[in-house]
Image (cartoon, rainbow, N blue to C red; front, side, top):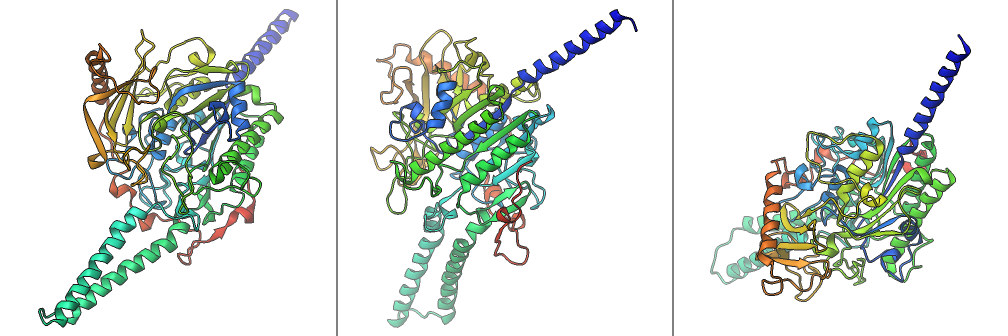
Length: 584
């Protein structure tokens, strides 16, 4: 081989290695933090002066803060489905037509359909190691307890450690229940009817006005006893059967213990980063906080100025800081795209059984979780990628949590699926400063299955129009939420329909206090007509899909129930302490 040929070969090898290194650097790692029920008014970087969130604030200082970042739904399950798939929840069947808009039982058959494509599934094909640690809330199994058709490992995650359903008051003894209305309807009202019936029959029999056979009294007493037994069984078994931790497909702790829970999950997330430091990775750290039941470790309990809620929020911020520190220690910060957000706004109606406020702050915005006033859907949105995203930038353009899907895929070098509509848009032109306008001209706000409002940011205007087809009936009158029902509902007597729709210009009225009229807005009818046409085009793009949140899909099915003890229904184990295994 001549010297010239050797030189050419050497140059080709160098060029190849440089190209490979450049390609590796252009494909960042991803750390995506998702809080639960955190309001936009909670972090310090969004104006809170008394809740301490130095880690979230650090992300904002070192990256971009989105001030009009929107959840695709104001409820956990549909919002998380949209986040993972980049699609409105109605497209995947993750939008309920009933009052129950989320999964409440681990043994429900509904969930994120296997046909849906998550960004984790596509990143896995690009050589990424993927993990979801924390809350899932998108279903587990379909036909039997081991098919795991909705499980995170079936949706592209190599590793899962966390809660398959959600954190509820019923998971923490002494913190009350979310089933108060159901108990009233299915237990207390029937018992009252039975009691009144028994008393009436007894009086009529004593007065000799009616002959009542003893079997009638027996049947009524048996029915009352049966209702009470079922109630006691529900109260006894709900926690172990629904509030448990899993590691991949195995139950690791049943029932779940809140002792140092955030520290345990954070340590596992840190271990995942350390084990995958030499390969591209995706970590979704999906916090249980600050959804009730509120919890915090001894290091944070009683330390904030906002009671149990503040303690939980500050511990979550500590966890964010721990992960950022690990990225620094591994020298991965400059090649890691970091995102922090919340699945919807703060739950303003949330109160403890002792009357303490357990909901967060939505800042100046009206409403909260479970409704599409700005307080329910405008959430924190902070992104950092040093050297690529400009530090300290604030963007007031409409963006969506659905945008993470195309953004992540493009950065990872994965093409978008071509067999379905993707509603999100790549954020990088905005984040890099290449564009000053959001690609979202229209956004559609759903209350479960029902199109609730339309947002329009015209290309040639600074106005941001928002039109409501219906609004929730707050109760009591004058309140900022639906306190009598604990959350707002989406149809029937719980809402007021508007014809013409209520119209606001959010650029001038972000608090949504002053609906416009033909008198106050000369183009009132033209604006509404354009928004209606956009809504019609959007509706035409929808396809009929199975409703994953139908009554048949959300009810408890005993054959789907997972239990770490096959001997009985006690379902108690603690393998978290036994094996001490970590993430892969």
